Image 1: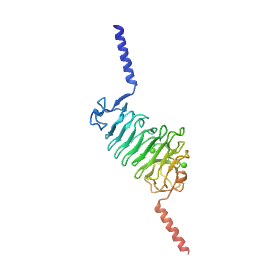
Image 2: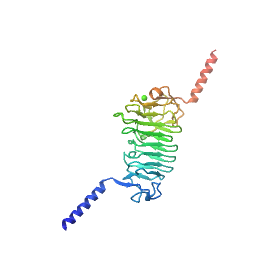
Image 3: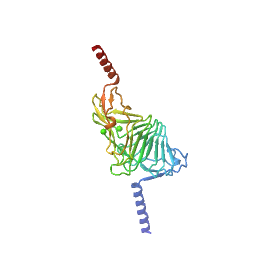
Image 4: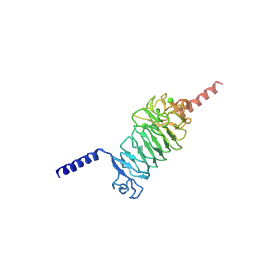
Length: 294
Ligand SMILES: [Ca+2]
Ligand SMILES: [Ca+2]
C-alpha cells in the first residue's frame, strides 16, 4: 500500500514536471462560432490560446479580428486570416512555420520577429501590414505576395532579407511586390541599409519589385544627403528570377530628394540626387543660358 502511494505520488510529480516543461497544446475544434480565434468555445480547452501554447488548427480556417491574439507557435497546417483590427503575436521563431497559409487582410497586422524566417506562404493583402522576418525560402519553398505593406527585419540595423537557400537547390524564396503594395526598407546612413539578398542555387527564387512602391525610411535620426548611396539588392544566385523594374517606384520617406536609378537594373544601387523641381529649374536655367549665348 505504501509503495502504491509512493508510486502514485512519484507519477504525479513526474506528470507535473512534464506538464511544466512540455509545450502546452491547444487544438481548434470550432465548437463555438467556428470562425473566430477569440471565441473560447472554438478551442478544446475552452479558452483562447496564451503565449505559451502550440496551436493546432489542422486544416481549419480561422479569423483573427482582435488585437490581443497570442500564441507560441502553430502545429499541423491550416489557414489564418488576420482581419480588420486583428493582430496575431507569436512568441517563437517558428511562429510562421507549420501553418499552410497566412492572409494579412485589410486592417490586419502581423508583427513577426526580426530574426524569424517566413516558413509558410503569406499574402499581405491591400490594407494589411506585416513587419519583421529576415528571409523566405531558407528551409522550404515559400511565396510572399505583397499588396499591402511589408517592412522586413526590425528598424534598428542594416542587413539582408534573404530569398532562397544558399545551401540547397530544393528551397526557393519568392517575393512579389504587387500593384498598390509597399515594401519599406530602413536606411541608416549612406551605404548602410536593409536590402534583398537573393541566394538559392537555381531558377526557383524570385525577387519581383516591378510593381508597387519601395519606400526608403530613414532611421535613428539619419538625414538623407545628396550623394548618399544605397545598394538595395544583391544577387549571389545568378539563376534567380530578377524582375526589379526600372526603379521609378523607389522613394525616400519624408524627403523631397529623389534618386538616380541608372544603376538600379544592373546592381540595385540608387544614388540620392536633388529634388525633381530643382532639377527642372537647373535644366531650364541651362536652356536659358544656351539660348542667350546664340
Ligand atoms: Ca525594417
Ligand atoms: Ca547590389
